[in-house]
Each structure stands twice: as structure tokens, then as C-alpha cells.
Image (cartoon, rainbow, N blue to C red; front, top):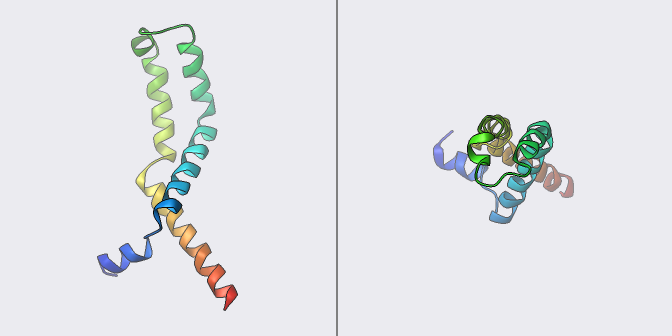
Length: 93
């Protein structure tokens, strides 16, 4: 499959992509809730010192979030969306 054809198949409207990104972020926050809580607990009552005092918790949180919010995950969500749209169009016909 050529690059242009593949790009057309994975293309979604800007609003749809924004909605998919939002959905992806919400899922990531849900999946990484334990790390979010640990970071929030560490950061509680701190101002500037949060940067170095909570470095390990922030790193754990970012690593977890990155598992669920990356380009590969977004592309997979786009493919699923396109398949759903194709299924809806086929049902109409």
C-alpha cells in the first residue's frame, strides 16, 4: 500500500482527531490514577520544592501516561473510528 493511500485511510477530520485525543487522555488518566494520587500526595503543601522532592513520582506518572498517550495509540484509535464509520455507511446502503 502506498504512502498516499495509507494517509487517506488514516485521515480523520480535525474535530474527530481532537475528540479521539481527549478520549485517549481520559483513559490514560483513569489507568494511571494510582500514580496521579502518589504525585498529588507528594506535591501537597509544596510550591517550588515539588520539582525536586517529587521527581520520582512525576517520572512514574509520566511513564505510565506515555503508555496510553502516544502516536501508535492514537493511530489505532483512528483506525477503529474509520472501521466504525465504514460499518455505519455499509449498514445505511
